[in-house]
Amino acid sequence: MTKIALYEPPFRLDESEAITPTVAKLADLIATDHPGDAVATFQTDAVGIPTEVVEGMRNSPAWPALEAVGQTVFYDATITSNPGVSETIRQLPQPIVVIHGAETWPMLIESARYVTDMINNATLVEVPGGAYHQLEAATTGAALRTFLA
Image (cartoon, rainbow, N blue to C red; front, side, top):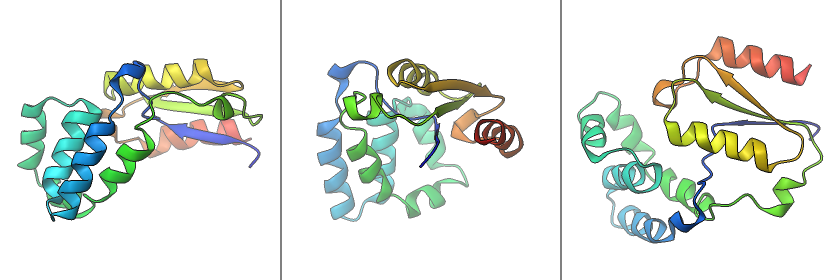
């Protein structure tokens, strides 16, 4: 790899907020065939979305698609359960762009800034939009083309 692009990496700034107990809870929910509850738990306990917002999500047309991939939240929680940026990642020699949407969740904006500060050779790029973690393809693509050129 000659260059690396990250979109809203979910590193936590406060290392005391390790989500290891959430990982175990998610494993149990997936093992007992409760993918919807796993998604909801991940959203509240790992991402930090307020419970009332997650309840609204459960009643949205998008929920069945989230529930269908519910087993993936265990993976997401596992890889982010160590909240710091490792020394190996900090010293990567490749140029790195860290992209975040201007309208994404504040935790993800803070995380993108944190990762950029922690990694050598990292540059932060904010793109328009990004509400609900949905990137805008045209502006994100343009940022990537500029970085990869």
